Length: 177
Image (cartoon, rainbow, N blue to C red):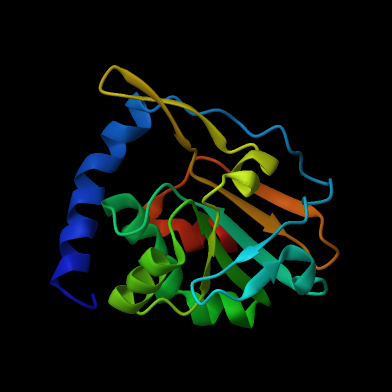
């Protein structure tokens, strides 16, 4: 654990995650394993342009999450951080995507010492391209949001795996299995 805030977020995620899995209506993306991952262009936390095609020849973990510095998203990001060396040794590049701003991403990265880039998707183009923006339900209220989903993309830009039932506390294990 890096700090008290992380511990607090992890505890909340641990307590709430089983409940959320039951009450959040999730949908599966229409993208399929074995098909090309849609290319995108956006910016990261520093304002640098990031394109999926920049990572041709590398395996990519492209994970979509709802919001910076919230319990489940923090638990997921910190789990990827804690296992980042193992992911890198296996040849993976990690990219997180949310609709948060570059400034928010920068704060999130600094606060939790995240070693990977976070992509800005304020206009939801990437969310829609990957079909992870949709209707969710929590506590009886329907709303639109990012459906937490991870795409594992191979060196040729082909989707090898789609993980939609995310275990935020053990997400790296789901990727490395």
